[in-house]
Amino acid sequence: MNEQGSGVKVSSVMNEPGRGAWRAWRALTYGDLPLRRVLLGEFAAVFLSGIGGGLGLFLRRLAYRPLFASVGRRTVFGRNLTVRHPGKIRIGDNAVFDDNAMIDAKGDSNRGIEIGDGVYVGRHTNIYCKNGAIRIGNRVNISAFCTVMSANDVAIGDGTVVGAYTYLLSGGEYDYRSPVPFAEQTGMDSRGPLSVGRNCWIGARVTVLDAASIGDGCVIGAGSVVTRPVPANSLAYGTPAKVVRSLA
Image (cartoon, rainbow, N blue to C red; front, side, top):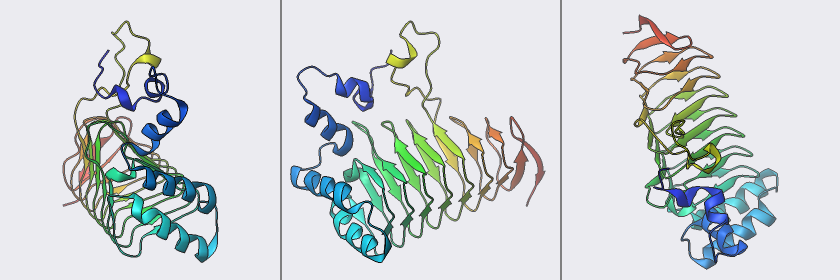
């Protein structure tokens, strides 16, 4: 079993000898964030996360801003936002996180998450690391119920639209040849980084698998499974996705 990054696996952290429940929770949720910022995060989660209307948006912005590595101007945090390892998350100007989204930069040696200007993250969308890195360019729109996961590297180019219920996965593979039970593996094996180019339209319920890539200006049809690189300016769809024509 590959032990690299085993500290990001919930069971390994919770079951570490000599670590109490509070220390385990703090490690999983806040990493090495100073205690005063941890307490601020807990206050925001308990008392501010569910407040509706403009008052809730205002109070959450005040409380969440000091938690992150950096936050730009006019960023909006919706209700019941889950934030983990905010010290490794950088957010640009005019970003919007809708209700019930999650941003998790968990990892013991990763760069974390970078989110550009004017990014929209839809409700119930999960953007999370398992010791990987995620870079989301400017003006990217990620619809509701999406998952972006990185145990390696994920990059989404400027101006791209990602349809609802889409999965972008870099890593997260298990070794079926290992004698170690799947539940005890880290689930962080990866064949390489995943990239989505600039100005792409990814349809609803698309899955882009580990080490696949999508070039600039592509359209991927709804329900497709992308298992290999798609050249720039292509229309592709199917399971597995195949290029049907050029858009150049």
